[in-house]
Length: 434
Image (cartoon, rainbow, N blue to C red; front, side, top):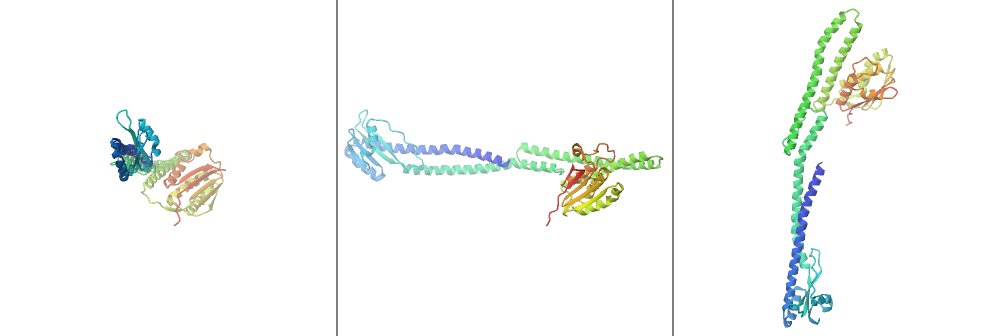
């Protein structure tokens, strides 16, 4: 945007300078040309009024001093003076003057003109033509004078253009600096930074007011997010005590199997809500730069969690295999990575087939099962909160939502697709080698 604004301002400024300088240049050239014509016309008038016995000497002296040639003839075309040029050289001009024809206008003298101009006029009074005078004048001096005047005009135009460029830079900076700040603030809010503020003391009044509104909006968004997290966390914590008391009483009841199952589901839901609130809080803190990125060895964490789930997998008749490819460190806390793996492995054991393959390759973790997989519609909704597949009554529907939020909080991605079973791919930012 800055480049486009500068281009527009510069084009407008240069057009204004050109519109001012060009007429001034042509006016200067026309004025000098008029002076040249008036001067030579006065010389012609002087030669036309001189007596015959004086005009010869005056013409020769004029040629010696100014280097310009003069021819004077009688009405019959007989030469009276041929100073520097012959009558035959200017016969057309002499004939036109003897017929009292008006002379053609002299072209405007420009700096690069170096030719000669012929001036002619009849000699005599009234309608009686007694002869003709022809003067060959050089435009070199007038052209040099025009060039000198143009130099001053162009120098002034150049200074004006430089001033316009400087003014355009200042104006564009004044206008775009608040917009740049707003763009930075919007990007920061989009990345999850809390209470991002921009300077509201620069630029025009409209942009300052917009900056103030953005700052208020940023505070309102942060406050709303804090209230949401506090609501989830407080509600979960407040429900734990009555839930514990309820479980204690259910345990004391006879034939309480179904009731105990429902209580366990409620406890699992509370745990999921707490985990989700924690993941949301961690995501915001990391986006705001409040938490230094930690490193984890993907292969080590994967082997540790597979070993932890192996007993549960064997009880469910599921075989878990780990395939190590290229080792690598990822930017993720070990506890967060372990929580993501727990969610994915738990789903694979419960809802997959009888084989689960875990592949570690640099910063990419892939968990593949040979179960029925998910439809395209279900794949789009699998990471939504409280979503459970058709015919599935187990679980809280928060596992994949928590895993996806943890991964994105660390700048990674979690993708699901079906390929002979469900395939979960987790990609995390890798630590570059030093």
